[in-house]
Image (cartoon, rainbow, N blue to C red; front, side):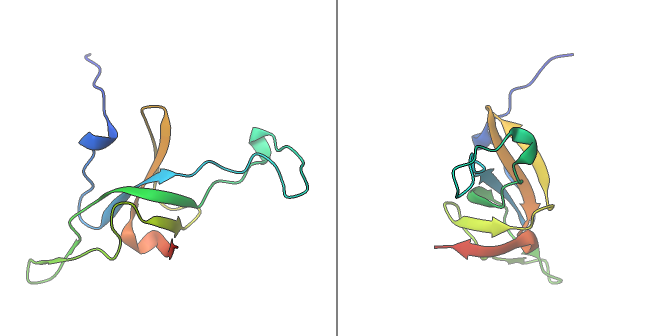
Length: 103
């Protein structure tokens, strides 16, 4: 079986889905204690790298997404599908799982 290589630029989300590059998790606590990999929490902040065309309305038109490429967002902890592309962590999730845009 032939292997394929998938780059971030070749991934195009469908409907109201977005592809988010996950920000790295904290390496140590505010008190300076280093955290092992097993104690780290799953990150909930990332930067949007690709956006689908939006959710389809009943009349066939698309509702434009509220987020855009480059937005830094806070998303639900257990939402979406984790993907590793080019050695970096990404998450593919629905726009409804995005909780806020971080300024």
